[in-house]
Length: 211
Image (tube, rainbow, N blue to C red; front, side, top):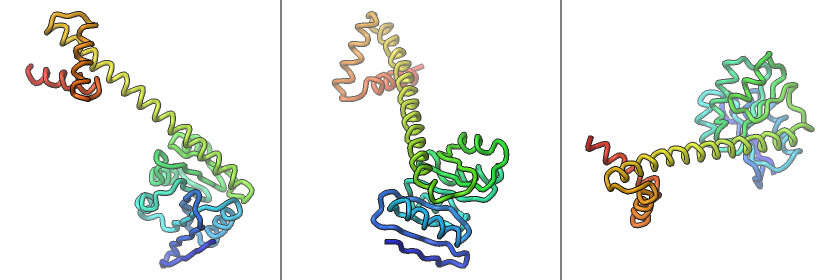
């Protein structure tokens, strides 16, 4: 069931489709075009949809709704406008699809670099909605996994560095070899029920205070 209301002087609207499967915020200033987009989405599937027609405080409005996806429809964006809309949409937190009627050279690449999951030139057509949404979500999830894996790899490297420093300190202080130093460090971590890297960092930090 679709419920729509446009309440402000600038016709800021809220449209909802229930039951919700995927929550989408549509950024569209033109009321008639916004309703066309909602109709296209309704044809494509069952979504919870909210329309933002007032760009002021866009980031705050999107954060308030916390959607799964942001869909931006714009006629001919400039680079500054694209960057502003992209940052406000929170591409690291959710999939962002941008439909434009025309696009200057280089804007497509700039949009993807800024985190836009799908950048579609030629406007929004009903038959393109579903594949574009699916592609945007798939791309977002892919980059999300890549960011997670990169963060985990970085953390593992940092952990290894601090553990090696702690082992070196134990070897020097206790006169033991590397294997024995590691065993002492691991035992301390088990006794304290803490991660090995946490115990190592505490040891390194404590030694730093004594210097």
